[in-house]
Length: 285
Image (cartoon, rainbow, N blue to C red; front, top):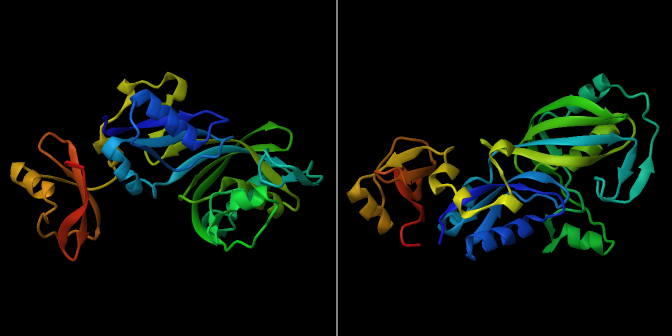
């Protein structure tokens, strides 16, 4: 079994689960999972864990994301993107790039978003997209997200503006496009969404699914490069293998990657009440 991860460039028309199924076939193992779901029409970076490294995906869920997408002014849809049915049209022929930049700037910072009906959010035990397929729309509570930056890159077609967005996990770029359209006095929807980065993992590093091979697997330690690290000797490895504490620490609470003398990841510990205690132990798992 391969223990590690791959950085996938998900193609359009594939669900994130489709990408996982492809990885299972390539690596000939069942223990595969992904972090950071992408809509079927979206493309770009998807992190896929392999073997024991699937247990580490929870530590990358909060990494910031970066997207590029086109906001199409003048038309709203049921799904807030190009896959939905048109719900309204607006004359926005006079909207300039400066106006889009000014409207977008209002959404930079800590904001609240209402999840779209076509999403994986659960309400009363049912996913919103399942309810939407039944023609049911329910009230959704707004959720806090953080948008770090929005840059208007260019205008690839009349009334279409390409945005680069850096944001927290849980941000819906479709909702942002809809909100920007409303802020401009009309409506808009999103198309051509591409996730260009998750944390430091970029689309330039990603492998196309149809070109993926076993040689593209990366060591599990690279998945957690954003975490502080502790190196342990043979005595420490033995302690980790039994899930024992690694002693006291003055560092703030949070996860810590534990590496052996060769730099291999053997566990993730967490700082708790001044001690390093086991969270995920990979040895023998």
